[in-house]
Amino acid sequence: MPNIFNRLRGDSNAKLSLHSTAQGAAEGTAATSPSPVMPRASTGTSQRPSSKYWGPRAATYASNAARKSMDRRHSDQRNPSEQEAGLVAKEQHKMEPAGIKQPWLIIRRAVLSSWINLLLLLVPVGIASHPAKFPDVAIFLINFFAIIPLAKILGYATEQLALHLGDALGGLLNATFGNAVELLVGILALVKGEIEIVQTSLVGSVLSNLLLVGGCCFFFGGLKNNEQVFSAHAAQSYGSLLAMAILATLLPAAYNSLNAKDAELKSGTLTLSHVTAIFLLVIYIAYLFFQLKTHSALFMTVSLEERIEAAKKPEKKNKSAVSVDSNAVGDTTTVPTPAPAVTPSMGGASAAEINAALEHEESKEAGANADADAGAQEEEQQQDDDEEEIELTAWAAALLLAVVTGLTGVCAEFLVDSIDGLTDKWNLSPSFVGMILLPIVGNAAEHVTAVTVAIRNKMDLALGVAVGSSIQIALFVMPFLCILGWIIKEPMTIYFSPFTTVVLFITVLLVNYIIGDGRTNWLEGLMLLMAYVIIGVAYFLYPKDMDTSSTAL
Image 1 (cartoon, rainbow, N blue to C red):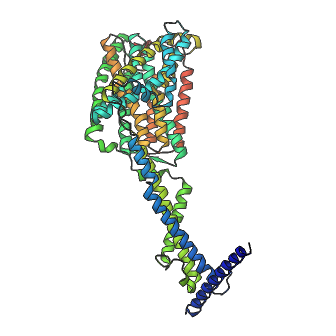
Image 2 (image 1 turned 90 degrees about the vertical axis):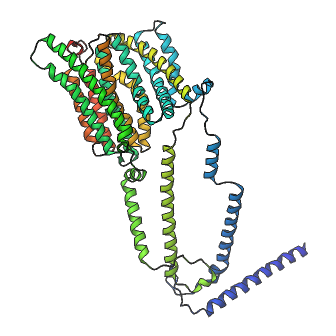
Image 3 (image 1 turned 180 degrees about the vertical axis):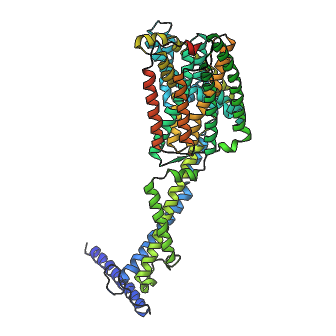
């Protein structure tokens, strides 16, 4: 034991001797240095910096930094970086498109595409509700919620098939099936002679997309982002097309205000509606060609930099401006570049020079961190933009589209059959059911998608879903059903009641005012939502037994 203590004591004395020798050498070097005396910045006293700080501690920091650098270099050699590992894993687990011989894989990918698909459990119940003689209210509610996930899967299958067909055919396919639920409900109601349900559901879809879906996009997107920008050229094109649709509905209403015989007015209104429907279809086809071929550049999304800059909150903008100004002022001072490393030879450096060097390093580090944050945000945005990938083959997507369309048609037929019982039981007007309730079914999936992308600051896509869907209803579905009624001898027109015409006109006018400048915020979204609530209350109070013969002719 004494030998051990003596040995430890000897080692300690040796270390103290080496430390004192190094300290003396450092003090000797500092004494021979011709540098002026450096005042300590913290106390304001003039004294020479301690060699204990600039000597052994600097060496310790340098040694630790070198060891950490070598450990990091060796770990990088053994394992790839986290980003590279993520890319490798993503490539390894990249989805192979599910083929037509893999039905369970197709079902799994379609069902897991959204949480809304939990409501698919109601589909078999809804199909069985009509043969089982359920009450009309139960049949309506069950099929009402069953159609919502079917509409979502219908959109998923359409998008997957469009990825295989290219831009032109894919855009045409999206235009055709983008409002498949409204089209199916309209066809079934038209065949049964429910003209008022067809007309109110079409106008209700336009109002729901413009006010409810668009308002939620602007409101919730504006809560997260200060302002959101989108293509002003696309917005102006959307506004012009909506104005054209309003013109098509105002003309029959103005024509019916003429002082003429009822029989002559009815015949003229039918003829005017049929002719107008044909030209509306021509305009819609020309619009697709304009958007997908000749002027596709007008509908390009706003750059990521502009979206990020507009989305910044005011306090963040002020902080960034102050940071830029401080960096500009710091650059006017003469500082060593690069900043001197902490070594024993710095014993004669002044405190001002050292502080300036440290401030320069801190400003560089802050700028690097800001650039890293902006880069991370940009990378996240780019990853969100690249999320869409092919998960189904063309034949698998076509099969899924056909099956889901059939199921949607069955549920929609039972839904339409139960409307009369619902209105009698709950004392509701058919106008309220067609204007408010039915559009929610067709727009629920689009609603979730549009709000999600709006919160992610992709307002071009959200606007295309909300306003673009309204254009499809007004310029494609409405004239198509009018021509179909002409073929099957049903008096389907595009002449609406004066109340509905005024509501539609004011809605389009309000939306054009809001989207005209290419920028939105949460207040504009709140205005659209409140307008939709007011219209909903008005149609809830709509007289149930009001004569609709002038509308249905």
